[in-house]
Length: 138
Image (cartoon, rainbow, N blue to C red; front, side, top):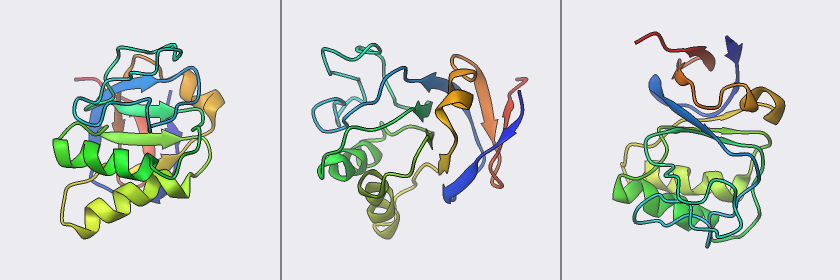
């Protein structure tokens, strides 16, 4: 499955496994900023780690602290390798903008409809700098 996502925040080419969440998540209280583990007791992917994955988000549950959690994940080296989000979340993405301003390596963020995200679950993906997403062969 090859698709092209809209670039929200550019980044380097990424190859990583896709963790496609099946429900929206709140980063504040839902993701441990030190480990990258999903800690929300009600979330279907509880116990999974977002670290180093292409994290596909069908939605987010708002909190003004989500950007701080994402910033902490970047600083701890536990951030996703890339983020696919169904709808832009300015609060969440602010964490990546601040991380870049601090000179830290940050994952690219791209807009991709939730219906397309589901088909990527569990696959190893390559995301090019132009937003092209393909299944990695290696």
